[in-house]
Image (cartoon, rainbow, N blue to C red; front, side):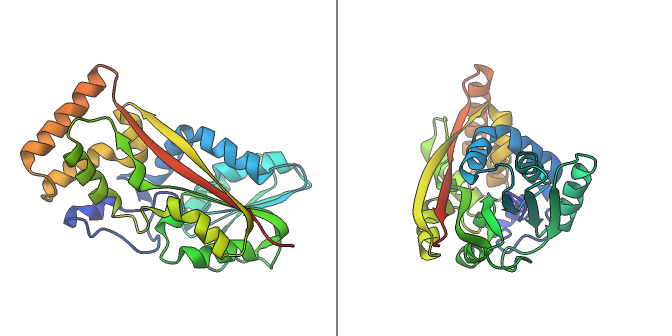
Length: 282
């Protein structure tokens, strides 16, 4: 479940883009997936560090990353759990797993990677001390089913942590509010669960987890390059004009407004990633 797997190239049909399970995720937002995920990792460094802190990546622990992408986070976990621990990453994308395995070669850390579906994890019940998933559930047809599977492989008393953006909360600083709202809504509706962030707490409680906590983590995208890197915002504006979501004059005005903000160093786009976690009973 590589992060941000929606194929924006299919959004040009007027908004009926890809809404199924991840398939060919070799390109993301029109760029090679590996480069996209690396850039996202830099942007979301604070979020990732908080996930690791809450997951308890300490020596001797068994930890699983579902939707691990190119494996960067698993390698970080492996370095923390050490040779007495276990760090495993799974992803439905075979290319991502191949890249993760290549990156792990020669590192000397106890990381392993498997191609697997979030709905059918190849591990026994209660195997892991903690399980994490970051920016994966937003793409799934059955979020509850996947979370139940994360809970199944977590040992009693272990923790499950799920982090996903709420795409209804992106806020670029632009003048035309109506046009901006229109573009953002259309663009992110190409993701199966664009508002999944606000649902995570309820999903974890429904899966039987106890002590469910939620922490909204702010994301500040400073400059249009950062906004494009994580959300493809410029591409969204352009394609909205191409398919008639916005008329050409509104697209030109919005594009000019972005350029004006960028020229004076003032383009900012704000968002939020929701971290939800809970403890398995036992």
